[in-house]
Structure formats: C-alpha cells, structure tokens
Length: 158
Image (tube, rainbow, N blue to C red):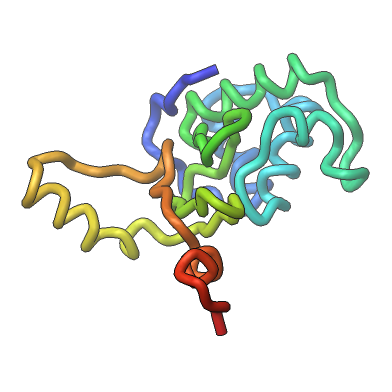
C-alpha cells in the first residue's frame, strides 16, 4: 500500500478526539477501527500494520491484518494517519498531526523523530541550491547517528 493521505492532517491529540473527527465525517467507529487508533496513539513511533494486527506484544487484542490495512487506509484518507518508510522493511503508519519527520541511521537502524521545523534549515539549503522542496515525512533523512559516526571514525561516542 503506497497511498498518501488525501486530506490535510487532523489535529486530534487523543483517541477520543480522533473518534469525534471520524463521526463528524459520518464514518463508523468500529471496535477494529478503535483498536487501530489506540495502537497508534499509544505508540512511541510509527508502527507496521502487522505489529498492530498482532496486538503490540500483548498490549492490545489481536486483529485481522486485512481489517487493520482497511482501517489504516480510511484513517489516512481522512488525515488522521500517514504512511512512512523508514529504511528497508514494511511501510509504517504514524499519526498525521503533529507532523514529525525522521532521521534513520543506515548502520544501526536507529530512528529519531524530529519536529518538522527542526529540519527547516536543511529544506532551505536544498531549495536554494537545487530548487527542490525537500520533505522527510514519507521517506526519512538517512545517514549515520552520532554513535555509529564515532565508531566509523575509530573512536567511541561519549
């Protein structure tokens, strides 16, 4: 699935606000849809559909994978969820608001979530030098984290 969200990000900071946003759009809030929302709002970062379906290591009931994908697609269409790729592996899903961007270490695969404005200087540099408007929401900025950089340079990171 490579859908990008079709609506502007909705500023729902809780599961209940997300449920209300869905109801305002005349969308049903089934128990399966609520489980997907609870998984995303309870997560510290983007999740795979498979991990949501498996119940987040026992924290939530298991779900049907096809149902999870259908619900993620609907949530993405209304602007509550977005699809991201953080290196190799399956696409992941994250809450659309507040919008975060990602840094991924190509060596240890550590993921760092950063507020969009933290990468504005990079965006400006890319725009000025190449004329492109860079985005790091769907695909991350990839490089070496401080620890892996220090190791590659032959010394340990403090």
